[in-house]
Image (cartoon, rainbow, N blue to C red; front, side, top):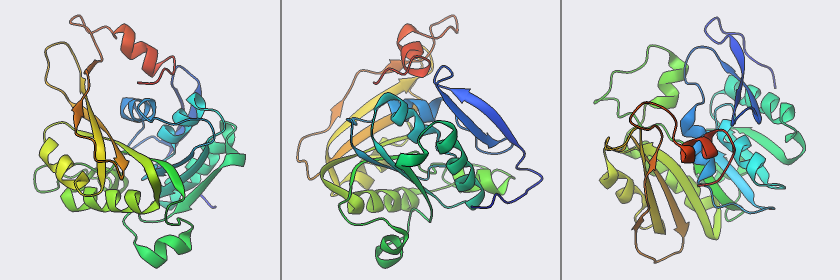
Length: 255
């Protein structure tokens, strides 16, 4: 795969998960951060699982999962060819090249185009996704095309990501996503009829602050009720990382 040259795409080499994962990513635009690591920590994966990252970017979340869970097999779907090329590079740099594949594809693709790209019905154990979650009419769009593509998406985009997830998951497989915390009703509406046994974990920037993110896991075919889990607080009142957040973000512990 050839990396396209873009004057705004100058890559940087970074390390996340306490230095355990090395990623090359664009200097400008959407950059991997806490959301990717928190998403990866929440995935209920076990060794040998087949994991699909929808809208994978440069692969940060997928490679954090693979670092915590040995012998899992990764499929990364990314619409941007330049980011997909970096994801392939990052897979090799982290030692996952022989058990990962990167597919350049729109995560919203249906039916025959999706299967032609290599995503077959019922073949995946775990789907992870950090879908575009800024509703364009409510948020000023980024001037950078790549960042705008990564961040902008309304309810239809969220529903499309989940439609793809439920199609490729095996019965009993799970989807885990991270999303804004200000519209839980839209999240539950998108999950309804597709997933059950839904768990919701709020992520709070500081004690007593409203949640900024929600991490949600749903199970295909489950009829279990929704459960709200204890929240995770990232920083104490003095702005220092909490012990639980440090264990997840730097030491690689699962949620």
